[in-house]
Amino acid sequence: MTKIVVGMSGGVDSSVAAHLLKQQGHEVVGIFMQNWEDDNDDGYCTIKQDSMDAIAVADILGIDIEIVNFAKEYKDRVFSYFLNEYQAGRTPNPDILCNSEIKFKAFLDHALSLGAEYVATGHYVSKMATPDGEVLTRAVDSNKDQSYFLYRLNQYQISHALFPLGNLTKPEVRQIAAGLNLPTATKKDSTGICFIGERPFREFLQRYMPTKAGKMVTPEGKTVGQHQGLMYYTLGQRKGLGIGGQGDPWFVADKNLATNELIVVQGHEHPLLLKKTLRANQLSFGLNEKPVAGRYSAKTRYRMQDAACELHYINDDEFELVFDTPQWAITPGQSVVLYSQEKCLGGGIII
Image (cartoon, rainbow, N blue to C red; front, side, top):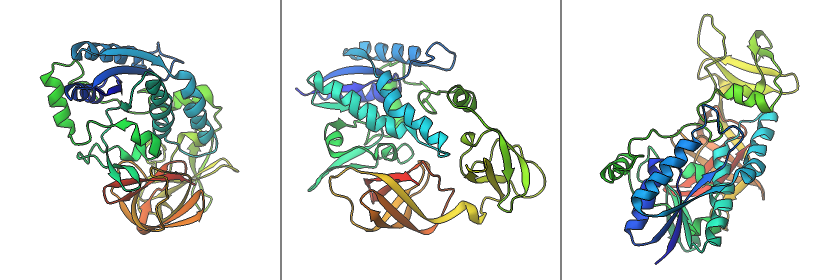
């Protein structure tokens, strides 16, 4: 009997993942990860309800569950990076770092110390064996595939991870949960960054970073509005700019940190929003060997179709991608993830 520790978040996906592993005859233990505690008592934080839901599910499934606090590791490894990136004018994706540093590092280490052979989560992703090791592959449910968020996992992490939902669709998962009368069966999916929850993003950032208002300008230097602080805006953003008037809608095209100016343009297809090349560093690949230079497809954001591209290495920790067609609003600080058909090979941080 294999001992498997499941990260139970209090949501339907991890609930069903735990059930499926128990059904297969494994010794299953649940762990609820507490990764944030600065303001657990405010109206936006759902950690109390989530932990109660996870405990209720464990009780129905007949498995033990433990609440483990990883808040210090989260603050040191994820939140400090999140703030540093925003201060540098970039737009980070802390959920990707949370997966590689907390769920498949701090949590994995804890699970192995309990004598587990594997950790499991409710992520929609699969993995497959290759002659060079195990590699992540897309989930069957293309609408829910989360390989993009897991691209930083290394070979050690992948080999100790199980993903029971990889071959299921979301409706099938909810159906299984309903059949077991789990309290999470109809629970809404969580959205947003774990430590921000549903609270207003600007209000949250103001607690940790000083704001400095400035001008919104066109590429030609004409002032068309005022921004509330460069950190609040991301490339391609349309909503919340407060610029009205005639003609096409306005979009954020760039940031000038030196002059504290937000560069805005009119029209979704403005040339400043379209780029055929990007560079990325902080490279991370699932297999120990880097993919060879050549033809692949890539995503520069989670909700997008793969785009065909050519991979070239600049040095050991930087590559360039040249896309067949221009990509919209490529954003520094976000991740670009490489695919070879169904295989998720890894990627890097856009610079």
